[in-house]
Image (cartoon, rainbow, N blue to C red; front, side, top):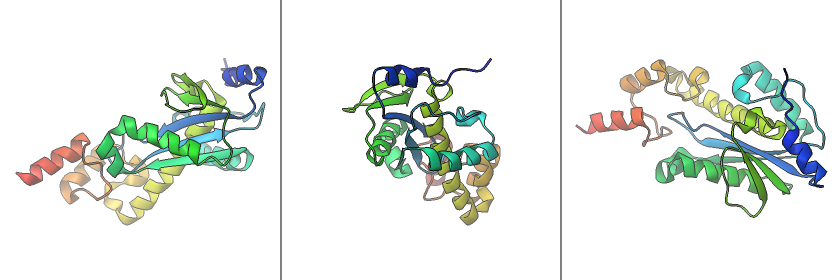
Length: 206
């Protein structure tokens, strides 16, 4: 059974809303690097066979959909909030900042936002949808754009520091990543308030 990913969009279109911005983020769980959000406005009644929550797609499929969406979308805004700000304000607040930055960086202002799970304090009307990346095509599109954008940052970081295996773990706390922290220490880009990184710093102080 295929899920209709256009229910929320269709409801808004029926209310004469034309510019619908889907918003999602990626990078809450990793120990390193920024949190990245995307705001994507798709053409009305847009269809892209197979597009869904980026976590359910292979890397190859995500890359393919990313290229299609970059070409087809009416507007794409990306928000990147650094690990330093994550450490200062916490990941929940940093996620909201990334989402707001994504809206601000959209060259066309959405009339209504469909947001994955979060509630945003913004002057644009919005609907928060739990597991929205699997229920709304616009949010699924944003999840793919955010995921590929962030993954590419981690692949670049892997070129500088191959021993941490970022190209495979994308900064998440895998066994290999945590072992590399124990062996080589932490990098400037690590999130200092996250458990395994904080534990390492406390041990070094002793």
